[in-house]
Image 1 (cartoon, rainbow over the protein chains, first blue to last red):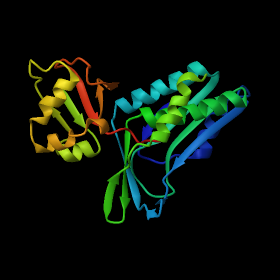
Image 2 (image 1 turned 60 degrees about the vertical axis):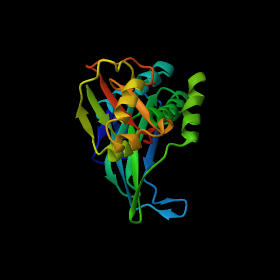
Image 3 (image 1 turned 90 degrees about the vertical axis):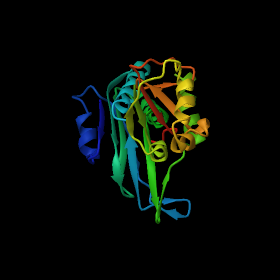
Length: 150
Length: 83
C-alpha cells in the first residue's frame, strides 16, 4: 500500500493495521523525522515538494520489487509532503512477514530505494534563507547495494 | 507536449508547468534541453549544469538520448531528496 499525503499519521495505528490475524510473525518499521539541526545550523522547517503521479508510480514500483524479493504478508509506505517542522514525521515504512529476517531486510530495502527513486525534494529553512537539500552520494550507495544483493 | 519543472528548476525558469509544441527537429530529450536553453536566461541558468538535473519522460526516469514525441510528458528536476 502506498499513501502520499500532507497530513500526519499515527505510528501505532498503522502498525496495528498491518498486524494480520495470526499469520504475521514479524513487523518491521522505519520512521523518518525532520531534524532540527544540520551540522551546526538550525533548521526552522522544511517543505517537501513532489511530482504527483510519478511519486505514486515510483513508490508502487518499489513496493512491487520488495514483494517480489521477500515473502511479505503486507507492506505500507506513507510519505508526506508540504511544510513540516523539526520532530514531525516525514515517512513511514512498515513490512509484515512470517519471520523477522524478511521483514527487516525488506524494510531497509524500501527506505533505501525510495530515497533515490521517489521524486521528492526538500527545501530547508535555515535562519532567513531557504536552501534545497542536495542529494547525498551515501544514499545512492545505500540503494546500489540492493541492486545485486537478494 | 507538457513540461514540468520542480524544486530549483521551477524557481530558475519561473515556471512549474507549461504546454509547448515540440519543434519538428527536436526528437530526443537532449535536443529538447538544447532548445529550451535558447528560450530565455532563466532556462539557460536552470540547464547550465546538466550533472545536477534529472529527467523523466511519462513519469519514468530517462536519459538524454531518450526519444520524444509531442504527446509525451517531460519533467526536469534535481536529484531526488525524499525519505
